[in-house]
Image (cartoon, rainbow, N blue to C red; front, side, top):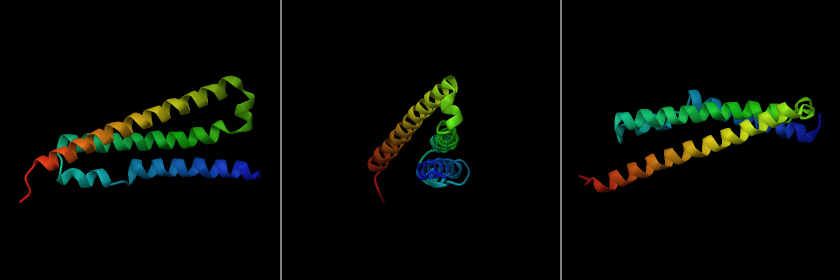
Length: 115
């Protein structure tokens, strides 16, 4: 097996595994339920699950995009990599939304007087 192909396969697997973890096992957003409203927390949990699903799809598309058979087919190659770029953009947008929610949480926590 080509060493470059092995690195690509490992990268694809790690990306998909990270997405799987965020989709099914990550509880970090649930822990914020104690300090933020239920509506915002539910939105944050859903946001992170969607992000996990996108990461899982990215892992699959990375694997598929580097296959020699796909490179021979121009239309499939372009479709896969345009989808990868779109999903990466979507991940960035979701991360920025999560960051904005975190900034709002921090701002609200600083405004509230501590006992």
